[in-house]
Image 1: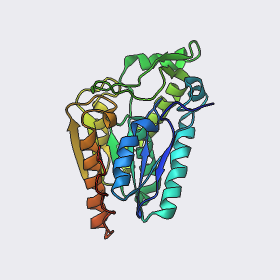
Image 2: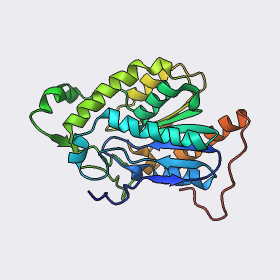
Image 3: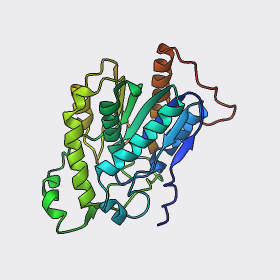
Image 4: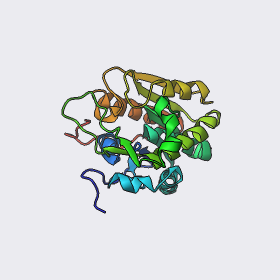
Amino acid sequence: MSLMPGAEPYSHDGGDTGVLLCHGFTGTPQSMRPWAEYLAARGLTVSVPLLPGHGTRWQDLQVTGWQDWYAEVDRELAALSGRCARVFVGGLSMGGTLALRLAQKHGSRISGLVLVNPSVKGDDPRLRAVPLMRHLVPSAAGIASDIAREGVAETGYDRTPLHALYSLSRFWRIVGAGLPRVTQPLLVLHSRVDHVVHPSNSAAVLARVSSTDVTERVLERSYHVATLDHDREQIFAESHDFIQRLTASAGGGPGEPVKEGTSGG
């Protein structure tokens, strides 16, 4: 099955600080690509895997579940850990859910987390019908491209497969119950207006993790896919500053300088 344009995984070999970026449910690495390229231009080693069932057609996602998505990012974390002195994990939406689960499972192997509009619970009352409806209808309306910035679209499915959504809802419960096990430094950036993941998800993360180094930023001009929206450069710059601060405090060297003429957007 051919990939959707822009859905290809991304990787860049840089210095000994690695960053794993995880895209969201029904999305693709396209939503993370500008962020990844920004960090890569500043000397970091960066990986954005394509999650199983994503980037082709929604029917392919229907036959996958959270165990498949998690296994992919877990493998990529192991690969980055094998060639980098330290690894940070970032995620958008369900990518944030995956990042939190990695943090719960791997502890000090992860140097810090950057979460953008993470999801850890379902607020839409219609989700209560998913356990039954998934046996009656295969899909619902899509959730891609909740973006305030005009002329920008997210590469993602126009339908939401209900079997996969049910699996995600079970994953939320697992990750939510494990939030106190998250101890890593944490940067959470969430949109004030989000039509896909309610900001109360970020509030739940901030209230329940055990991390002592916690930074919260509210994105005033972006909707859900903030990594492609008006506040994208704030996300990129603050995540880089966060990584640099923690790397310096751990005694690591700075990343390679940005080459002249390299764009940060």
